[in-house]
Length: 281
Ligand code: DO4
Ligand code: MG
Image (cartoon, rainbow, N blue to C red; front, side, top):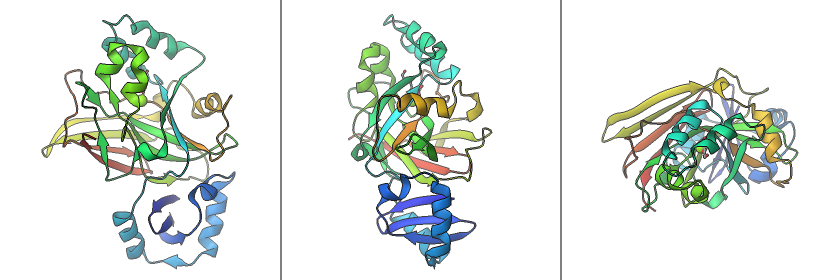
């Protein structure tokens, strides 16, 4: 089932039916057994018409986040390791990426507070002091405060490759700025975990022309989703739960950089498509 956060309430979609839930977002999603709870809501809350639900999703959509922090994992796919080794070769930091890819402990970094997160249809940003910028399409977990994965969404970990490549210690500046994260369109809550054959696809379009298209299946990831969640929760308590981006495998060629006006479409399996247009803040 899918849960869309809108300005008028939360639209729950399952089996071709829709209902509107009026409840605090964080209280609604931060629970064990979220799927079963939403299934019961579907039975007890009055249904709304499909046309009404789709109009709300189309016109009133918000990113599926409340008070949660957004974190991100890095170098979880071989392609990410190789691309970063190349971009960091002049800074002397290249072997960091090889080492973290093979290490037991994953790379995890803080990405965003909710006010820096864009939703589906909103703008994402590139930095004005960066010359080389890319979107990073990432399966994103919603982990509740007990540390268990309850849902999934599509994430875009917007990144400056020039700033990160200059010095690995600049990572927070390459990754954390206004509208550097996007989440959406919905929170996807399957009955059991996500299918390992789920595909992540990304298109980048400039002036109506396709500039980049690639895809990967999530089972190519080196680490398990539970492993990433467990590391994040080792010494951090998240009272409202958290979102965790799980790393990218889709990296455009080195001569590609995003420009203002580009549109990024990221589709992940049954979750849906997150679309954002690139702008300056
Ligand atoms: O090591 C830097 C960031 C890695 C990352 O964001 C990714 O692999 O997706
Ligand atoms: Mg990333």
